[in-house]
Image (cartoon, rainbow, N blue to C red; front, side, top):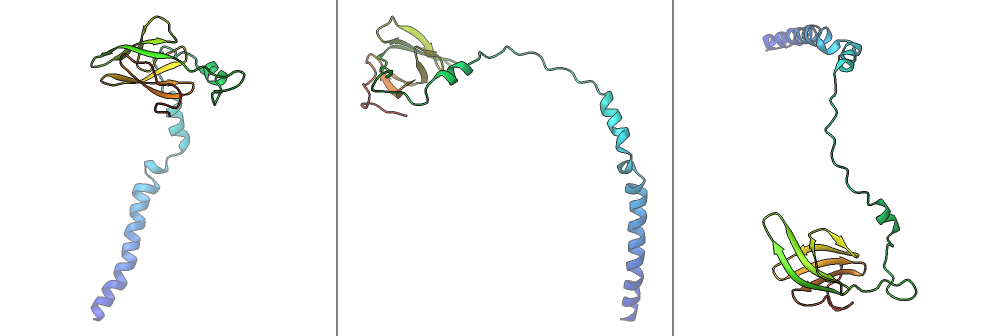
Length: 155
């Protein structure tokens, strides 16, 4: 029992001494203790290449600021309900488009995400589309006009 105590009494100071010596050799006088000035100097000498220029996205800030938050459906300045007729659909692996007539105008192809006359094509399904208008989301079936306000799904 006394031998075990003696070993413990000697092991504790010797362990502390070995730990302190390791700290002095590896951390205290090693690369971790170098002055930051040397490292900052190396960073200043690095050359940074500019990223390649990308095509600028169209500025839509004016559209966001100018558009009302809630569409007026009655009274002066009310938003007219868009009459949308779906004439055709085109779907391929990477693209989707719909042939739509908006407010009786001649039909035009509208790609997914594109906006024309306040109507944005949000989804192209098997035989119908979902469009976003000033008064909400609407489903339009092939060969039919968008349901009048209150008849279809809204978002």
